[in-house]
Length: 277
Length: 312
Image (cartoon, rainbow over all chains, first blue to last red; front, side, top):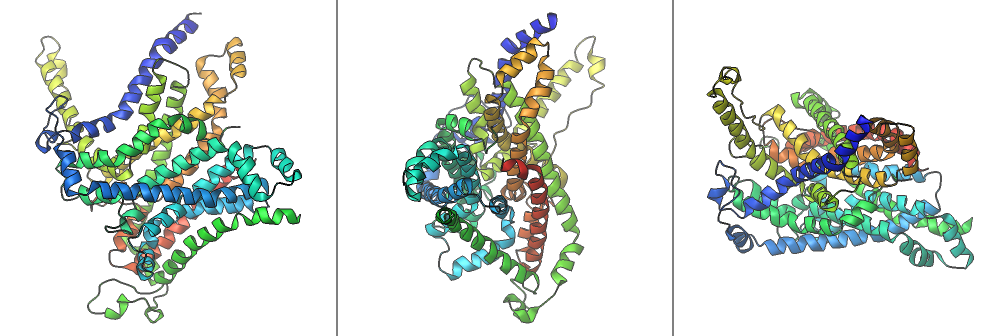
């Protein structure tokens, strides 16, 4: 009996306290980043654990004045939104075909798609830059959108496939009996039923697009440069200006972290990858 | 059967796009890997344009295999990916089980926990390496100084001072050396991807059979054996999925390596390719082909692991 009593005590008091400690520990680096972004550069490198100081907005003002933050942010939003939309537009029909009309090759096609994500980007950087420059698409929104879409398409299709497979086949077949055509099946039956899954997929795709930092940095210079490029340009020569660096970083990750907070219910319920039976 | 043709055709746009996305760069890489192709060479300007007349056969492959960095880069890639997978799965399971039951502030703790997953890799690296792990300017330096101060004041304490004077002074670790910067990469990526594991395990735990658990409690099963014999088997499939997705992402890890280990010798395979590509495209392409082979070996392992359950 004694053992049972102690376990209950632990789960009543110990577990919540431990959970809070772990949660705060995981969040601490982000908190520190935001805090540092309000310090002057001199305060930021002081060798003390500086929690209370005179906050300044200089770093943010400097960033919007000298670095054209809004252009980078707008580019990030445009490219991520359109890449996500296109990935869904191509991915939904594809996942529908695989889930409801599978052939013997479906599993292999799916695994092959995922394997394209394992190709080392660094190996094809040179040919890719060469091609995009020679067809005049270097540093254009279009190119960034296409590349972001292609990078995320395998994960998008796979996630959608796992959601669609949970939908009973009978429902789709009943639609076919009623003479609904394929487009109608997708629009009237599939999308409403799998709405939660589609939303989670879109959210994850958007996060990955926003955070992509290999191609977006290397296929752009100014016109289509995203926030990744802003970070890339700021991290090297001004390494010791922690205040400025933190402000740029916080402004780059801020929008996506806040979006993640608002959508966390969707992520908690939706991010199954077919793991829940 | 003909009414199945159209639905099946719907997957062709995706297949064709990915095929092009894979084949064009891959065939160019293959071509470059067999010729002499450099960006700058004053004595042999003909090597700076790709052409079949610069055919080198397997010369680039030999060059890469003989370079001292190649084996190290492969080892290091596997060390980094393997350690991250190990740590994120263990931490992910423990945290997911810990926050699964309701407690005051559960929602807030969940938000705090998953936040790192949204952070850009480049920001992640800049933040950790400069502001947290740096031995002088980062919090690590402060923590070490604090511990030393504490030990120092204990040494002058009456009675027990002699005991603490036996303690050595704690020294801060520099995460900029070759080996330690690999650890820095492991730490920061684990911080970022543990939330992903937690998210997936949490979702899976919500579907755990509660009646089975109650029955186990009635039979006198303790917390540990419930975890060992009910929860862990239930998490088998999500663990496989977390391992697979992370392996796909971390094999091509680049930004973190680049920022943490600027020229200090710590490299993984993608970073080595990037180094070669500064001038020697031929060698970079040959390394790229090796990386493709490595990725395929890993992919076959993963396929064995979860391929079967995927289609059930």
